[in-house]
Image 1 (cartoon, rainbow, N blue to C red):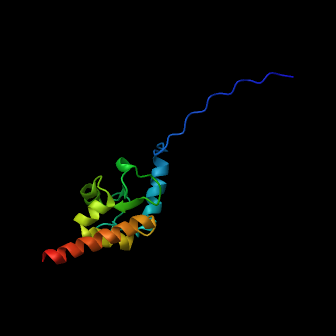
Image 2 (cartoon, rainbow, N blue to C red):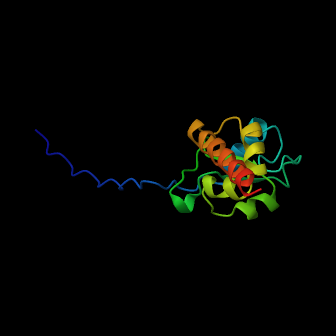
Image 3 (cartoon, rainbow, N blue to C red):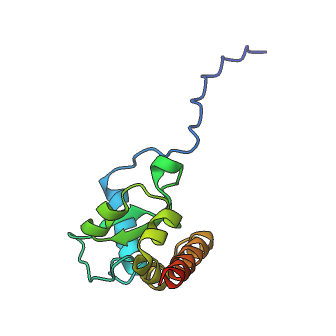
Length: 132
């Protein structure tokens, strides 16, 4: 009987991060996101074309969000900078108008993110009514 060759050690899987898969993969995600969001910024509802649109992670990567279609939406440069790395609850409580548009145009976002947006917007409007 022949002796077995030793196995090569496998690389450990990295959790929480995904490897960059290249420009072709990013373009494919951007095209799919443009289709899903109706070619509009999900925060301010302005019309976007492929060159001016940016991808925004609703739950930011810096806070442990993932790079998958349920977390990626289309945003204009201005709104993407305005949101920066804020969590959805923080951003929508500061800018409830963005949360209203988000609920309307972000169709393929995970339902927990939409629920959080709805809650933050309603609380922000309730606080405005109490302050007035």
